[in-house]
Amino acid sequence: MSEFLQQLLNGLSLGAIYALIALGYTMVYGVLRFINFAHSDVFMVGAYIGYYVGNHVPAGTLGGGMLVLAAAMIGCALLGMTIERLAYRPLREAPTLNVLITAIGVSLLLEYSGQVFFGASPRSFPEVFPVRSLSVGGIVASSNQLVVIGVAVLLMVALQLIVFRTRMGMAMRAVSLNPKAAQLVGVNNDVVISFTFGLGSALAGAGGILYALNYPSIDPLMGVMPGLKAFVAAILGGIGNIPGAALGGLILGTIETFVSGSQWSTYKDAIAFSILIIILLFRPAGLLGRFTVEKV
Amino acid sequence: MPKPLLALAAALLVALRVSHFSDRIDPYFLDVLIGVGINILLAVSLNLVNGYTGQFSLGHAGFMAVGAYSSAAITVLWGPRLLGEDGGSSAQQAALFLVALLAGGAGAAAAGLLVGIPSLRLKGDYLALVTLGFGEIIRVILQNVDALGGALGLNGIPDYTTVAWVYGFVALGVYTVTCLVHSTYGRGFIATRDNEIAAEAVGLNTTRYKIVAFVVGAFFAGVAGGLYGHFKLTITPTGFDFTKSIEIVVMVILGGMGNTPGVILAAILLTLLPEVLRSMEQYRMILYSLLLVVLMLVRPQGLFNFNYAAIAARWRRRLTSR
Image 1 (tube, each protein chain N blue to C red):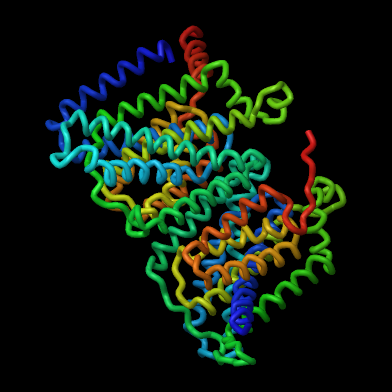
Image 2 (image 1 turned 60 degrees about the vertical axis):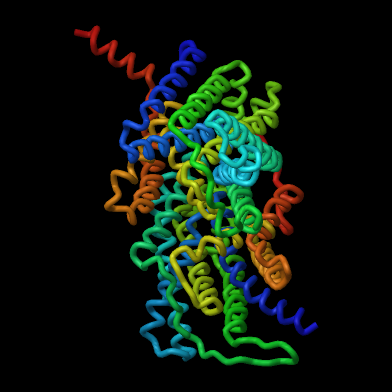
């Protein structure tokens, strides 16, 4: 039983990270109807920003940790907005296939530039939050895991507040429902889309830091697998649906942790893709999504 | 293409002639030539799926992997038993190789069927990701099958690939794809790409066209994989991952989706470029990805996609206006 609870805790910790990244995917899909392939590499850049900043702050302090988190979030937000401005905005009217290919191109560009500039060999992420080991009942939890879950929950609550309680959030919802109508009532689509990218990328940056806390080895290609799995999580919950992304992330993280603790652990990467295929075959709208009929 | 059957025969003859003289050609050039041929086959097969039918598939390397492993399994695991102790005569080896390649292609075609069927309901982004997922699943499965070497790969594959084999299959592949698409049946592929709903409304079974595109494309990718395996003599599952799929996709996009001569040129260019840019090896993938982005922003129809009719008309006007 305690084994089960232990795995559950691990799964929630991993799932919280997937949820943060999935939120970025789902928000961008909501306003632009396109999958931002480069999102997983923004996650990687966040981890590296954390690495460089973390080496200059006092280790193991709460203040240092918050500084690293903030730096990564701001840096990634800027990166996301730059990518949108340079690579996606000129293709706003183009067929979605072209934008998809561009997104793949940007993703590869970030990955391979990272390999050249950061070096392909993995680096060790510094300890930025004070690490303590807590033991409750039969479960051993590292304080890093609790930090991950805590920060993720805080960020998701903040996102919920932004989207549902601010004017910018209302504008985001308007653009995702109907971009042309939003323009008609005076919403500046370009600003809203930039803001969405910035917000999603900031969450990815936070996800990068949190991931690096639990798995302290970072390399330029670290974003590929978590990014793909977070995308599956976003689809699982219903793409375009914010609570759905969070739910999908938690479910996927938990399933993956249980699989990696079982005898089929080498297949854990294939599990995410199998879930993707099953969901797309049987319930393409996702768990919380609504299926829209395509009209001609 | 006028008199396609004649062109096919001519191409096969040229391939055999070049191979006959292969011991007088520098082995490095031979290797590059074989590499170019394999990439042309891969690009043309993907062109059928991506370019002509509009199904954006990112898992083509998975089909290549299935073909490579199937054909290698036959030559490595069954070859010694079938050929006997002395390795068999060259005719027997050739026959074994042909059987292995066709089996590889058939295996890949079966995989293409498996991938094609779920993909029927999906469009654009979702299809791209599901095919990507399939490619990764194939890779993970191959990594876990210890009989085929597991993560360390399969070694000791006999060196059967020659210029004749490669270009023979390239000629066959180009012939098949071109004839398929330019036939009356083949109009359905292009109709499916242009507007699927209208095609369905006119009575075309777009489902069947999509499956046929996947299966034929996968078959040739499998054959290319078999040729690749018997060329490199050792194959690992990680060599057939997402990066390889992307390399093939870049060739198709650079050449212009649905433009076979352009895709062939792009395949040649993108195989020769790493050789020419050997000194800048580490920047190669950065250049590739930058190329993708810039291409989409500046010339989305591909570098080699020329509107021959318009160019011809312009020249005629220029010549007659004097």
